[in-house]
Length: 107
Length: 82
Image (cartoon, rainbow over all chains, first blue to last red):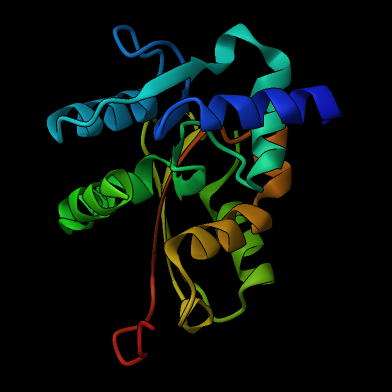
């Protein structure tokens, strides 16, 4: 990944307290895993921004390197990588996600 | 596509005591549900646990032989979780 891709990723992540790299958009997710994350965040009433990795090959590859995480979606809260679809579902089911987001967004 | 047994073997090469179940969600061998239980996960965050499994399957994921991987990791019941 080159410096400009890294810096674009950092700018995106910093642009919203909750940021999601996904396939497709909030309204039209292009992948079931991305859709899971959107639905979970919606159900918690959290506002978030997204980036469609299908629209940009450099970000699509770069984000995997950035987080040492080979799959999309990827969720960042206050700049910190929180996980992908499986982890979000697990945290949601355990009630941890709501708590973690409330704490992060209050600070 | 990959064979479930090959996925299991690749994970066990990286995590020798792993108990692995692989479910082929579509029958096409590229959408997989994988569960891994290992004492090696003890004390690690979920992110680190998943990264260990992704690391073992790096080649299959990078080549998109595995297109979608739903992953669940657990520590054996008799191990402390943190």
